[in-house]
Length: 205
Image (cartoon, rainbow, N blue to C red):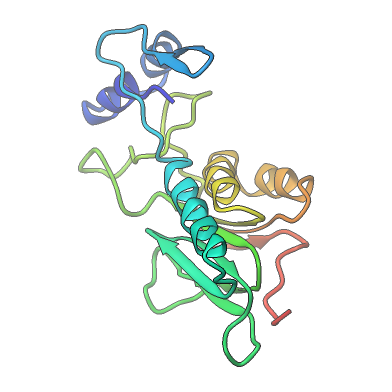
């Protein structure tokens, strides 16, 4: 996604229509394996999928080496293979963005990936209104949810979906995830409410 104009607008306190216009102008031109930015000042970030892709490549390297039992983690993006020594699945807890001691949920994995997107760590203004995730339809940062955690077959998919669910919000985000096989989600809204899809299972499996 081309974000140079959006982040500049957020840093200077401008949002809404000017930022949306900047996003439209900044749209990259893709041809085959080449991507070209057509606007001066535009920037391209792969934050929404890069960590997940790296985790998947690391997992594939381990499996090629004959290692079938692992947990790979990179900046909160996790992929698991097999089970722990005692035969139990890997347990991953979801932290509350507003309370370090509260854990809204946990998931148990044996061969899957999980990633979380949140609006509580990287901000571009003193009022903390503009963070690193941008809603392309509005040209501003979503604020209805503070975190979205997604389980998926691959870390790349979990990474991308977590960002999408955070932007969509609880109702639309859950609806999206429940249409996708092998996926589940847990969402913490800005008022502290926790919503999860039907596929989210906290008991060991």
